[in-house]
Length: 113
Image (cartoon, rainbow, N blue to C red; front, side, top):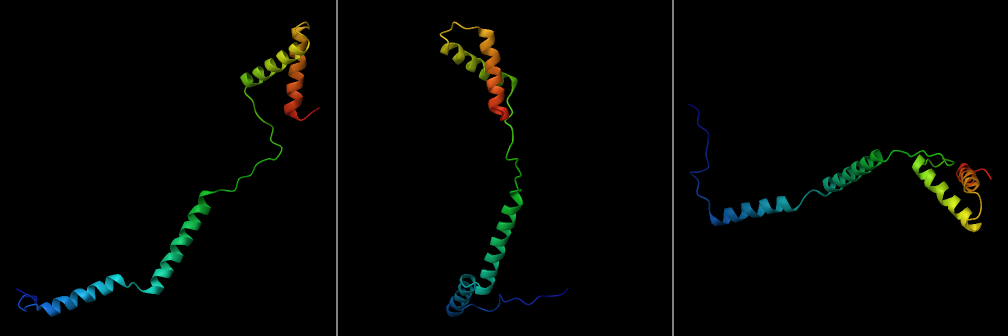
């Protein structure tokens, strides 16, 4: 059976215990300056690359035509037809007001005048 050397037979003196504790504290409190700066550089570079990876380049068409649902278009035409009719004192032809309002909304959002 193999035996391993133990330090249990040696009595620790208060001076040696304090010295060991002081050495341990010094080792924990004083990190190497070069390693800390390098770690910060690597960490900030890693953060930048992560942020850059999350933001893909957005490509948008500058002349993108707005897309409306049929319900939205209907409500816009109805409102425009109402205001046309109101200007006429509600005495004009409602169908004519609707047709003109449709043309007005179409021209407004298609870019035509």
